[in-house]
Length: 194
Image 1 (cartoon, rainbow, N blue to C red):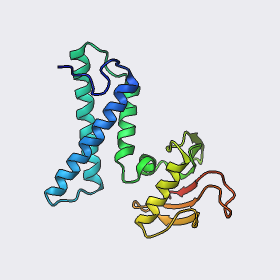
Image 2: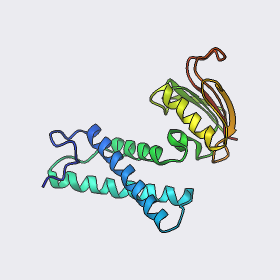
Image 3: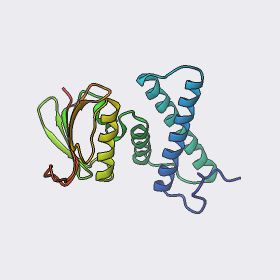
Image 4: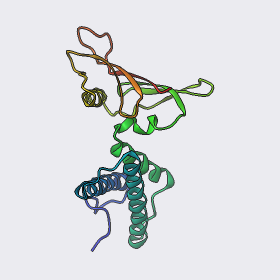
């Protein structure tokens, strides 16, 4: 019996292993959260984060073990960090923006659809550009719509501008992509975190 990740029997590339590990972590996290709910407990944000970190550590250790048994080199540290980041994003209640909104490093975050993300440091005010956490503008638009719906607000083609607070208290202002009302060609988000 092969211990290679399922779905990748003919190749052992870091990209394939990272994708497989992230999928496995996401499935394990959902299973543990379901099990917790069956025990009539609803995990808080700290408990959820602890479950995610525990599953990440277990799955990375298992991947190292599988690599050794199958005679493959282990994932490099950069790929392991990619697994951690993607799994944390996928399992954050705030989705792809969750990891960026959790700390006190940034005073402001601006996201321009799938184009870029600009973060302003709280101390010093230095602005740094990063790739957008969203793969496509539709993903950014849908993320805003979902977050707005959680607090009873609308964000859609007929309501292309919205202001509200996320679950963690961070304020957000979003303007939707091009409509007859808005002049932008992508979903623009502004999140002052102070």
